[in-house]
Amino acid sequence: MDVTDRASDVEEATREAAIAAQLALARQPVRASATNCEDCGTEIPEGRRTAQPGVLLCVGCKCIQERMNRR
Image (cartoon, rainbow, N blue to C red; front, side, top):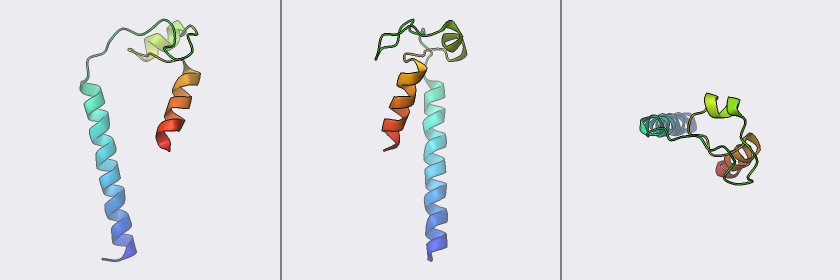
């Protein structure tokens, strides 16, 4: 098995894991959105709560959380 085959196998496994994670997330029941961010306490705009049912974090805190999870 050469480097290209290994890279292809890793890419495929990563893609399958990401799809499985998204499918599992989609199966979870949607809870009511929070009116205030659970991390910083600022009000979450109604547009965000409507667009993303079950949201618990403001956009700023969600961005920080996603950056932290990438590491």
